[in-house]
Image (cartoon, rainbow, N blue to C red; front, side, top):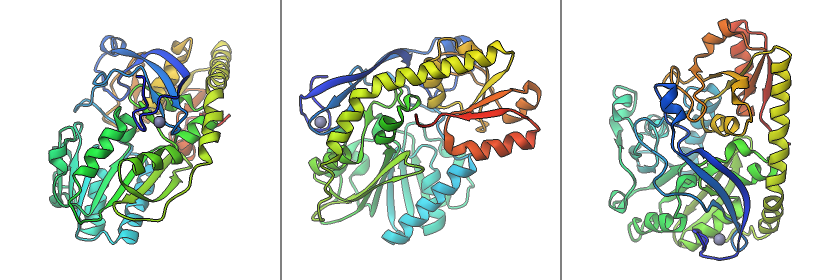
Length: 391
Ligand SMILES: [Zn+2]
């Protein structure tokens, strides 16, 4: 790619390289051989000096598989579930989303739409190739929720919606500006829907050198500044932008028509500075983890990873000896019994740790540390807990 997909600018600099990583990190594999044989691709992050956007310039569109084998839900975590409910409550209150028409692009398994239906009586349409319409049958509020297991297309957006929601999806999209323009073109003339997008906050990834959050499926990395600039370029009117979930998420609310401008011009220099030092800081962090884990194994300690999602795939891909990790734990029953893409580690239920008895549990997302500590205590597992966090 020679032009920025968000602004069309050509002031691109390569800032980070991680070659030969699994292209699909949320896929479920039934056996170790298939998991090891996962297709691989390269990450070559480029930073656009014009708009501050960061993207994988080596991405092959269509390489990652989004299908019914894709299992991304975080809904089994009480920490995430309470955040999700508070988010739905907040949107319903502040935007009076009651009895309205809501579209969610990239709705996953439809959990958020179910909340908007249950809490606000909204009629909801969700589009996602990994949706499982049968999973919500019989769930409270599901009678107002329609899940369409397809990729988003302009035809699916061309009707009146009071709110258009897109959570944890834009970071998977290569032609970011084209995508926003399709969403914009679907908005019925004269209406002013709430447009709500939530994505990972790349500023935190840059600040923390959080390499576990850099993986193949995420080709597009935004900070508040580059996100606002993209929305403006696609003819949206940004209303507010904020960081949520311990700064892990970046949220934008927008509409169409006139709105007071948001000035985030100073974010450009900070992003450029952090981007330039990212590769060195990641290398230091990766070396530190490799050393820590190797030392634990040398002293006869068993090491487990808690969390089998994309962060774990990145973390394992960067370890020189991934076999130092005994097992990977996940609370999502749909993931248990499968094998990790790339390294083929077995994914087990927390209960299995009562037998495996790890001495060190590495938590892939620090926000779940307390939740996991309680689970381990309940299981009678006395292990040290370490979490991936900032430098
Ligand atoms: Zn740009």
